[in-house]
Image (cartoon, rainbow, N blue to C red; front, side, top):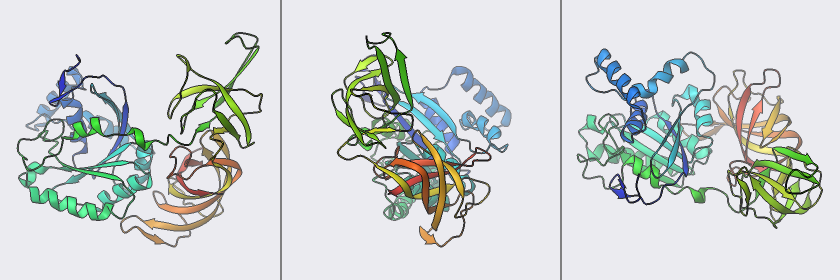
Length: 434
């Protein structure tokens, strides 16, 4: 697209590759597949042969219209054959942004799928059927979005065509859900009235809802500001691997040693003083290298190799961090846990914990309570069953460099693995570490 060309009536002068990850969830018939199909179709993100296939299938089924839900429903048949944790990911882009959609089932029995799909999301879309209003699943989805600290929530009030594009039906959902989200920790909630079937307010503004003066969904997705959501203050660099090269092959060093991984927080430059954990030793950054060559700045989600001045003993699972305010090298974690195992979790369970790049053994010391997701109440519990969420205390076999999840989603999250089956049985969010 040429500079200055328009998309959705707005000029675009730059082509950016900023990535927005968003998760979608809704009840079975809320129109999620149609919405994703409409986004892909109206943003020209599908191929002609895909569209032709949808047109032919729609005709064969006698739908009477081009059923865009068929674009995503192809995966659903495979999904329902008992795949354990399955999230369908779709990719598309516009001149402004690249997008990854995690399409997750909204039903209560798929809480673990929702947690999996939404764990890395910048934004969450929840669909509400305008005829039915706010459901138990709507509240569940909003709660999980707040638990995972997804910074932006978009509530699409769908099927507005079936309520005659009535503003009062939209306002009713806004009012009810605003009361609910006020009890949760969600900073940014946006409501958009749409008809995914007819395309109203999905990619283009609707002419039949003049009372709505906000942007259509795609415009909101293209323009929502996500950079400040990342922690740029506290340097966190979990070491994924140690790169050693003898002789003088690289950069004229006699013995090259670098530490590869992905920046999980903060900004780092050559010359910065850093601390290596768990040893607590201090050193300075000598150089930061990438696949494309050396850089002067590295920030979250960049994959880099860091070289340091001193010859320290640094290995996989260690962390290079901000020396003035490093994470604790903690053995005890208080955490919220979403249980994903078929066998219930009971206190005393011994599991493997994977936190950033460190893997060690762990024991669940206590189960404080289970969350009743529909009321947000805390219930005493002696176990957590599949898809239940509760607060636990965990003791790790070796120190974990953990932050509270509210401070850093990367260093504040972990998974638990069953040692016998090697299955991932829980996703956890750290409340406090000591």
